[in-house]
Length: 140
Image 1 (cartoon, helix red, strand yellow):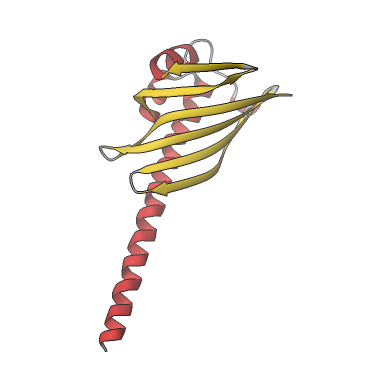
Image 2 (tube, rainbow, N blue to C red; image 1 turned 120 degrees about the vertical axis):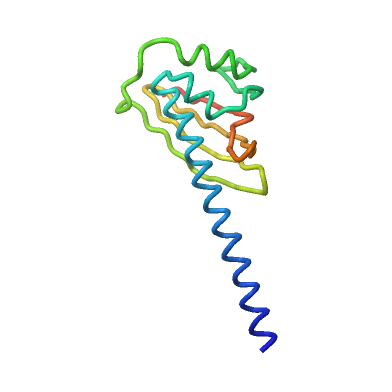
C-alpha cells in the first residue's frame, strides 16, 4: 500500500511539473509572438512588452558585427509604415525551459532574406522577457 501511495505521489509531481512547463512554454510563445508582431507592425509597445529594457541584440549585418541596446533597436524598428504580414513568415523552431530561464530558436523568412534568431528569456515578476537576441542573416 505504501508503495502504491508513493507511486501515486511521484506521478502527481511529474504531472504538475509537465503542466508548469507547458504553461511556461505557452507564455514564452506569447512573448515571442509579441516580438514577431511588434516587428511586422512596427509597434514599439509590443516590442517593449516582449523585451527587458536592458536587453542586447547582437548579430551580423553581412560581415559587420552589430551590437545594439534594446531602446535603440526598438526605436529604429518601430519607424516607418506597418508591413504587410502576408509577406513574412516567422516561426518558433524550439523552446527549452530550465527554471526561470529559457532559450528559443526562431526562423524568420522575410522578402529576400532569412533571419535565424536565438533568444534568451528570463521570468521577471511573472512575465517572460527577452533579455538577449543573437541572430544571423542569410540573403537570398
